[in-house]
Length: 342
Image (cartoon, rainbow, N blue to C red; front, top):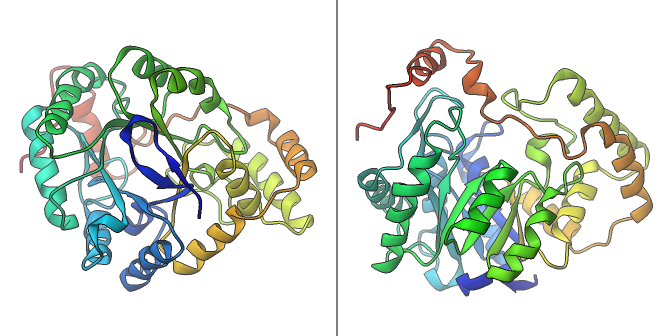
């Protein structure tokens, strides 16, 4: 496994990195023992960067990852988690956003306890665009200042964001002091807008982490989870691409992973899995070249959705459960700030 320097973080990270959202059940049911085996397989195959969040599975992902890393020497891996977004039991969309200094510091302590560490190599400020961007400026002021303070006192090594909208990425990279950025769903078969960030990232030595090579499930045989905001018409286009790849004898996931992870300038591509077999398969795919003619044909099929932005905030704007409806009703009131109480 090749390792690359992640900008001014100073970290040498594996070209493929492990996102632990799947360990929290974000993409379906998880067998904890198998999830732990997946983490160990990743380590054995040279993956040394692991990312997680307390929002994934309402802290379950951090808990399972912590159990998997128990007893592993800390110098064998780099670890990041996120602050600012907290998902309560009940599922995707039942989210609290809190970018206060007090909550961020408490969140770091809670994550550290679950993960069995007193130090994080990177902290990402999470999903600041959610709930209609009502809390974006709060995150950019108090939230960012709080994370920089944690860096100054030695609790963390690097400051980053983990968000989706490209306009916010341009603003953050140009106007704010960050060491890295976890950019998801912007360098995959159906979107290459991450490339817009490369010039300023090079100028300011910001380390880019490319997340979601499988397009949050769109670029897989199984397809995306119900929470994905793609319309039925959009989903059909992806199913057409899946079918075409199958007819060529190449799973679309293979082409997707290869394309996303083999860009010579992007230091690392983050995938998520809770199965050791999938980890082995992804590493094998990453190390094999892809067919440029197949890529061209698949991207021709995907042309109607190429670089199309997704509204990942949509599940909370159109809640499906009574719990989500209650949270949405509160979030839609301009004078209500949702915060965790613990």
